[in-house]
Length: 183
Image (cartoon, rainbow, N blue to C red; front, top):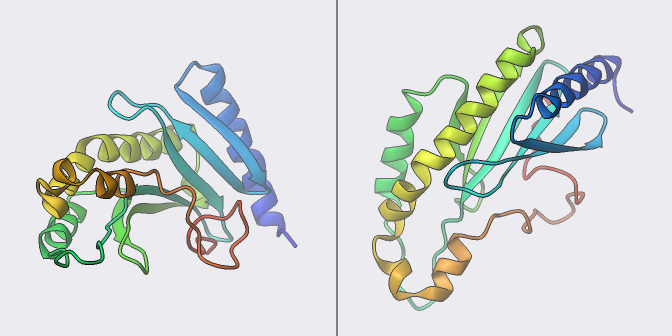
């Protein structure tokens, strides 16, 4: 059962997102359920980026997939240390969102806004930071992780550069983000 707090925030998010679309911002969205939205952000270097907004009891969480980190059978294991150092150093300079890793090592951006801070300006700033980080960081992250292997191995490149939308943990509903972000 959805709580009254989430219902209230759902209405607020819906109004803000509708206003963004009406203002001509390059964002489209789908309301998946009360308090759960998937947005498609359009950037200069990435044609579309899917971002989850999830209203929880205390905050609105945001989550966006960045890249797969794939070890290939029969190939030497990847040295993930340079990637992890980069992500940690980059996190020190970030404001509302941070890089993180899921249980299989894929890279995500995650963040949250407390209920009291949710307004059009804060949501625009948060989504702008997500899009800017994705556009500015993905090439560096891929190069740190794989070097020139992607140009030599097209099958690996296809796996790494996939959008991440199709893979979910077993038993997770189709609409759900990759982890439980309802706090």
